[in-house]
Length: 192
Image (cartoon, one colour):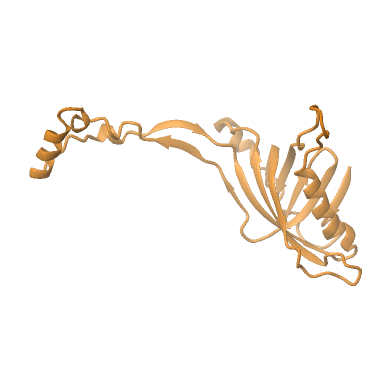
């Protein structure tokens, strides 16, 4: 296992750091402003158009009656929401990396490891390559989510560099998603 990022003693609380671990890398970064987690359920109202005013042949009469009076053929039942499923947890995680001792490991190495973590290992002309590994995300030692995929890694190319050309500091923004929906009974176990 290779370690990158904020791994040297820096006096910063572990509760202000995020740990991303895959098969062969662990990257530790400072949680930057704007970090967020979203858990969403998909609801629709499939009965919106199901009323007497929508029946073919009488819709013109019903619409005319509604426009001439204060009554409607729409009911509360037409607004009833139906659950269509849920989405896996989604995380937007900006991480700050600051070189205190070794910019090659603390900043550049962290960026390289995260870029490797989001990448597959494909063969040139035949199937049988490897998709990107899933990882575990530990945010502030208070939220742990396993089986996470990194969907996007972005960082600044014009960030401050040292005299050897290594980044002295950089902010990397990760877009992460769980591999599957979390059941209600599993949610308390995510929070430590």
